[in-house]
Length: 367
Image (cartoon, rainbow, N blue to C red; front, side, top):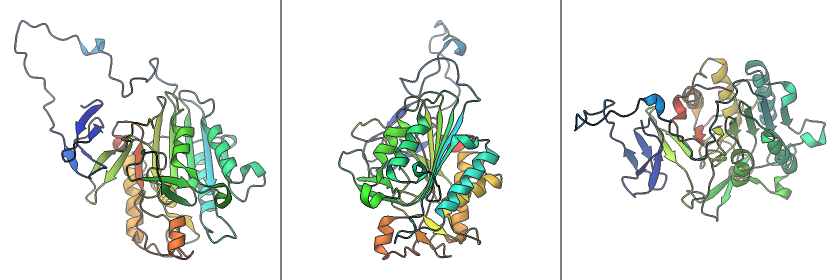
């Protein structure tokens, strides 16, 4: 209905890009919701009967969501599948997490058995790996992400799963609405530093070509926009949703080279994620990873929206504000505030973001 439609915020007049089919959008600057009038699907009669009719639809080229999207035939439906899975326990440190390696193993099993990812097309980085290049330090994580998008072709399906600590730091280049960059914390972050969302975006989002799809499943604190994708699905308590335009006001390009990127993350940018045994009742897991896998296995993976709702419902029903069961907050900020224990006080709401100006919420889920 609306292709690449720009509307001004009803409150602060900031230009916003409305996803096709959406009837409202929330401004991330002032939080106001702008509603769009829905017009009749039927065209009005011509004012001049002598005016020749427009050409038939078959002769009109469909509008492209990106002006630079390459033309040509649709991508191959049976491309390669590749995945990078990272689980970091930070063992023997005050930042230790109990469930992240479990998350990595469960995700690998899901990809191989449910979605037919070949075992030799999955790189897994955990402290349990004997290959020194599979230890989840900063250098190895960088190399793995470069490998993930290297030589990708139309029809390829890529996946990046991360379970570990996440944090945030002050942003100074003007590409973050909230003033903070989101970060992932490699095993050696205390000496080598964190991996910032700008680098993640430049490595696996910007180069993605037409016909390639990338999914990111990020189970960490402050992870809502850790890929810096343009659009975030803001859910309301009554089940309604609106797409927020998160494109940098500075004009910095954070999109792809025609590819499709969708991210499911453990919580909003200002929230924390739990490492807990309250969900499985058996062992510690990341709350988000557990709920994602459970949604798929219980048949709630029809659409991205159904997965998001299932994850949120499970966390809420378990007690989203205090998951219990020996929670650990997977945030360095949380660690510092709680003196290393990280227990309690959680408010975790999984998030859905996309690089495309389309309503991904209703799209069929597919890996």
